[in-house]
Image (tube, rainbow, N blue to C red; front, side, top):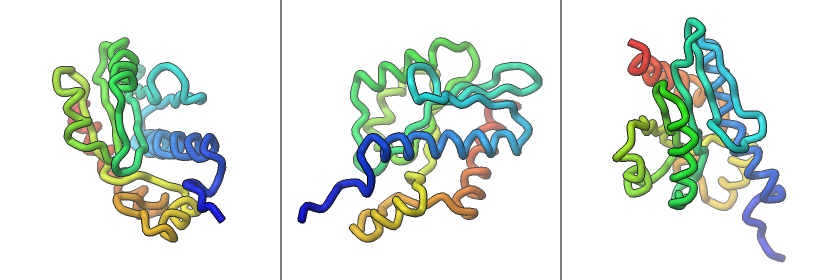
Length: 161
C-alpha cells in the first residue's frame, strides 16, 4: 500500500490550505474594525485588500506554506507585480519562508510579515501528526486565532500610525 502525501486529492488540499489563512486574517481584520475583501478564486491579483475610513490602507499576498516550501522566481515576480499595482502599503504575509526566500523582497517596499507556522484545518494537522510532520504547523483553533489576532494587530499598528 502506497502512503499518500495528502489525505485528500492534491488540488483540494491546496485550495483548503490556500483559503484558510487569508479567510482567518480577514475575519480578524473585521473584528479590529477594518473592511476587507478576499480574492474568492485565489487567482490573479492580490489575496486581501483592507480599508480603513474608506481608504485602501493595505494589500496583501498570503502564503500558507509548510517548512521547506520553495518560492520560485516566477511566483516571487508575480507576487511583486500583484502588490506593486497599488500605492498603499503592501505586505507579503507568509508562514514559514526561509530567510533566503524572504531576501527576494529585500529590494522592494513590500513588508514581509512572518506568522511562524502553517495554519491547517484540524483533520489535516492530525494527518501530518500521524506522519510526524508537524514542524511549524498548527491547527486552526482558539489559540492560533488569538495568536494571529495579536500579530495582525501589531502589523496594522505599524501601518496605520
